[in-house]
Amino acid sequence: MGDSVKVGVILFPGGNGDHDALHALEHDLGYEVHGIDYRETSLDGLDAVVLPGGFSYGDHLRCGAIARFSPVMPAVREMAEAGKPVLGICNGFQVLCEAHLLPGALLRNASLRFHSFDVFVKIEGAPTAWTQHVEAGTVLRLPVAHGEGAYYIDADGLASLEANGQIVARYCDADGAITDAANRNGSVAGIAAVCNTRRNVVGLMPHPERATNALIGNADGLCLLNSLVKTAAGALA
Amino acid sequence: MSSPTSTTTRYVIEAEVMPKQGVNDPQGDSILSGLRSLGFAETARVRCGKLIRLEVDAESEDAALAQATEMCEKLLANPVIEEFELRAVPGNQAGA
Image (cartoon, rainbow over all chains, first blue to last red; front, side, top):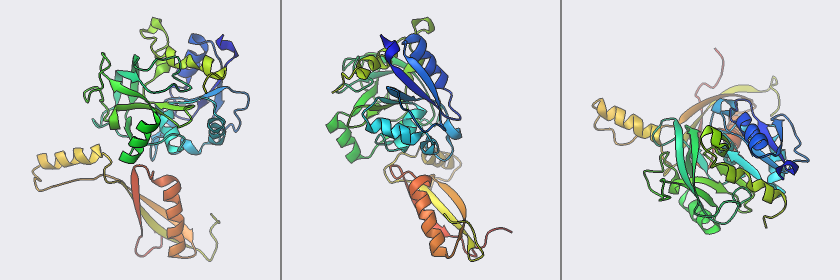
């Protein structure tokens, strides 16, 4: 069923999660995938686009700050504005925030250490283009790999996210309890993922594309990425 | 954005980019605890930002500062988390 869905993965210089995303989307989900060079200027014909993880442009200045001005970004913005599913994973989340396609920003982890381990996140709120196969309250175990993953938004912005149901996932413990201890990078309100008001653009710090096959020990990410089948069919209001 | 001409001078502008009030600054906190453990017990607070030195060809210092302001707004600072201050470095001529 997934083979009719065409997903682009942007290949930024300094990316390292792009081929993980391409592999997961193609082999574990059966989508038609296209690696899109960052110098391309059109995403015509694609149903969805993923901005993958990595260290685009060496994370210089701020994570995502330079990638935001890549030639491909106007086309990403057009897809977002057309209501098509756009997903930013890790560095891709940082790029979407820098591009103001998502609210907030990502700061250095409170620990000042690079985090490379599994975390638990709890999906919440109304469905988004990328989570509509996942019931609110579902707890997923997903790997993180970031130095700048602490989500920040000011108090007014947080109130607006809460009011609009734009918080897509928060860090939690294995039982789904939202605790300070589970929020290891120091994100405001334990936020691990947010969406735009239209709910088609989602950014998250953990890596669902690195958890799509039981053979490698974890398939919790599948349920996020396979929402695309339904979304591409126009099921998201 | 015009290219340098004989009527322009090269100005040195420093952009100081700092985390906004209320934004967590774990680097600053870490430096603070380092200073205290070195015995600088009187250190009350540390905020850690960055200094970006620009050399800008412009017809006047004001024009150079105006360009630098636009650079900060578009790229050098993220208004969600950072604020910036600009100053023209005295003497101004770049190079040497």
